[in-house]
Image (cartoon, rainbow, N blue to C red; front, side, top):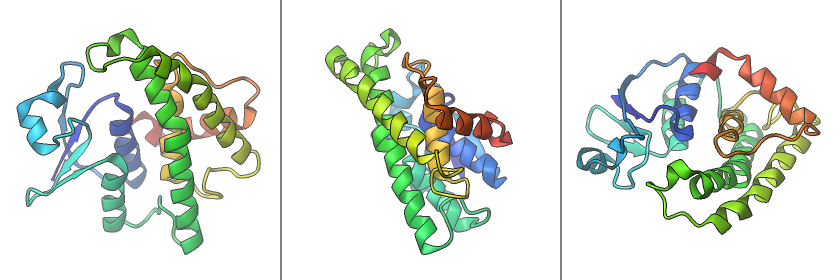
Length: 202
């Protein structure tokens, strides 16, 4: 199989960090998003949406979307479990995965895509939409900070894919010209703990 990677793109980093946590090695094909290789005819044949990452199996099957790729590997390599083990753990992982993605990652991504000058060649920018997502991103951070005030990780006692998504989104704040407020100490402490994991550098 081959993993078509996108470098610093958050969704590509999610998969790399997940695989590092699992200790899984996959043949990787770099995709230069800055050079618009993800929009080339060759790549669009694999993913017409023009997004990375893409996992191509040996039989030619294509899996897109970062969480779907991670879920595929979870079924192949169930330990260490990053999607939970018990029914309750699995439900909590999915719940906080979706909260991290919809309430935090997406507002940050919209602010970046619609306000950053470097994205003008990639996006029909609507500055009002970008600005509207700044407070939404802060609200998402507040939700995570409140959750982390009484549990070590988003889904509970164990590190999971939900933490990976939120951690990489925090790293994405800088190019989006956002930051975690100093008052959100629980989120900052959690970030420092996750950043110390070897997988954080993947």
